[in-house]
Image 1 (cartoon, rainbow, N blue to C red):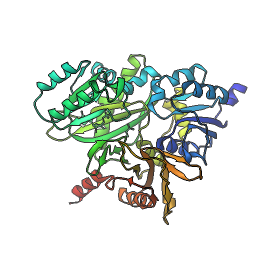
Image 2: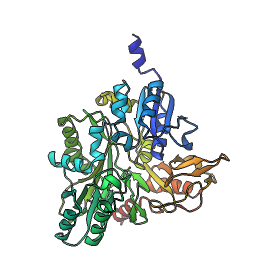
Image 3: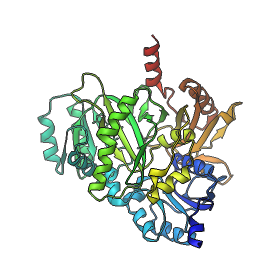
Image 4: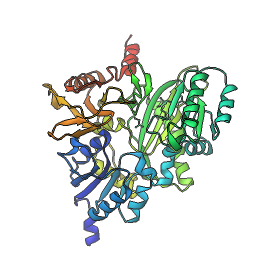
Length: 447
Ligand code: AMP
Ligand code: GLY
């Protein structure tokens, strides 16, 4: 009977969220609205989370610290935000002490943590992706490039590189430089010991995140991220400068095709290989442009976690209880779970430190002149800290994400940028064109 009561729907639970970015702020914000939530603990979190959770200063890579804290707290649910603790096997350790965890075991997280594993997995299961080859020697990689017709080509370091290990080279010269940087100069350390060279795919990129308990898989609304630093998708790749949902290019026909050719085969592949994936499976897709030799949606990458800023866009339009969904994923009962979304547009704009994704200053004081419609938007902290005077200061590249939702993307954008313009710190930077592809598509259909 006691056992039953502890697991019943009426019990409140403590939740431990691991991570410190705007993604974790957004997830914790949504989790805090659940009637199931007693207290939220975040390790290490950030100042934006202070009012809704208990912050504990354990870093995401301090595995022993996290395990000891979890042993003491015995939370009813642990949610892992970033990829590095997944790669290090935190979920394995937490499950071994009997905890329910939203996040895959390390072997399943290889879909993200090893690009070679992910590519081979796709080949084994007939999942559409760009043609590729992998190299362990710089000489072989350079010889391969010599035989390549000039034109765009993509060079990726095989290991984790905080979103920076991909070079979309415009020509062979840039590709050669990327190979040398990874394999000779070791710019990405061991992550660059193996390099993948793959076909460049032109088209529309979308992120399709899915809840899964390893048996059932449920896609969320498609999101379009803006990975390049500069307006019009120019400049270096970043972790993501802004995003929106829904994406009109992701029609119900495309969604059905993606379920049939990518999402279901991925789950079937995981099952067939005995890989236990319970959490968020993120499919980064390319919808090839017309005239491309590639037919139908292709997988660019998998991630074994929520995206950032994709999570910030999605949680405000999720109607259902995120605690229930995550418990169902962790516990293998997702089939019985209702997941409902608001029929609204949502947009996220990232305010970053000038200089990101390269060098930037930290410790700059952040102020906000609250606009009159402040309540109409959400602010999720990422790279922030508190200084000795108790002021919020910058501490990372992507400082904050501003999110707004409304009946149309245009209205949501007005609200979001209203708030973005009210945030000030020295050398702050944000893209002014988030959602531009969607707005252009609308224009086309209206003309
Ligand atoms: P990834 O870390 O693999 O997602 O790559 C980062 C970004 O590089 C992607 O979001 C795409 O914008 C771009 N990219 C990666 N692979 C390709 C490809 N084969 N063709 C075109 N762009 C790509
Ligand atoms: N926004 C892309 C990612 O989280 O990987």
